[in-house]
Length: 88
Image 1 (cartoon, rainbow, N blue to C red):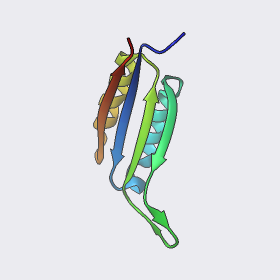
Image 2 (image 1 turned 30 degrees about the vertical axis):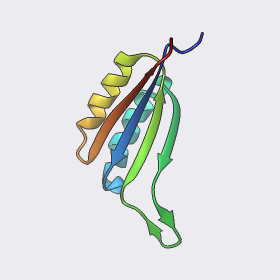
Image 3 (image 1 turned 90 degrees about the vertical axis):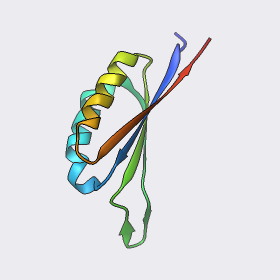
């Protein structure tokens, strides 16, 4: 069945080391609603940024995506933005 919409959640995490457990727990809990997950952070030899960005492509269940975003936003150091692309 074709998607009715694309729902993308951008998850910005500051101080990844301290917040990773809470974030990972929620991503696992909502794993069946996440179609694609992409993690981005600066890294090079001898350096790994404490901040990171995760892009989540959700299934087209907007209610579930909003629930996940709300729970993630409650974690200190985590900010979530939603992008919504409707298909005709």
